Image 1: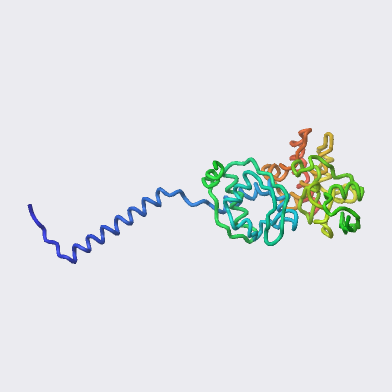
Image 2 (image 1 turned 180 degrees about the horizontal axis):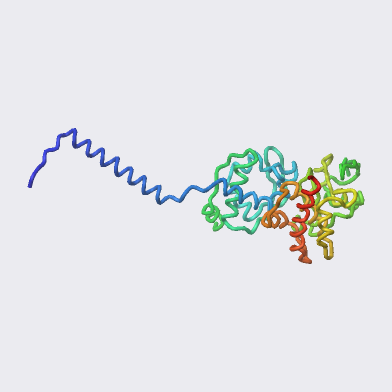
Length: 148
Length: 157
């Protein structure tokens, strides 16, 4: 058995190289396994179509709503405070009093029968239009909320 | 009861009504504009569609007080002489059958073309989906929206 003498400095260099290399490998693997980030622009374009079909006649073209009747989506504190609640409302509708940007609203909104993809698209459109910066929603997130 | 000032088809009206009265009843029963129809009463069929600042809204479920002094256009106010491209296209393509939903259909189509002068079939289906026609005139509606887009382009040229 031959014992090769590796000087201390060299040893640590090899160890460091190994750590860095495995780090790169793991990062490479994880980014390979991770789903590609959603194409927000394309999702928003599809979401606009869904918006025109189901949302526009109450929430209006620019998400401004009608004060006291249909709550706004544009820069709406209520909407931006809870994304999951908004997804549930798209799926199942909502009723009862709510306060949006300091004004009270109390009309019934019906849910819409659309796919997880369509819900995520319309959410991405609403959350990133009308001056909103509300992040993104994936179809998988919608699916988990639909099951609950 | 309250005194409410309305601006309908560019004309001012002052009415005495319950502030919660749906705009549709103010239009039909108080002002006498009966072109806008009552269908379902819950924003699901589109027969009562009118424009609020150019956007299509369901007049059956919006309180009249909330649109006071705002610019409302009904089917009667689309043009004074049936010359609006959507009206012309509806006549050319003979769209209506029983006709009950058509006022709402026309108002939604007019709003669509204002937003999108060159709609694809998909755009038309998306925008018109909230307007139900139980005679099933949908193929003619789609055709007429395209005809109206052409007519609108021809008149602006």
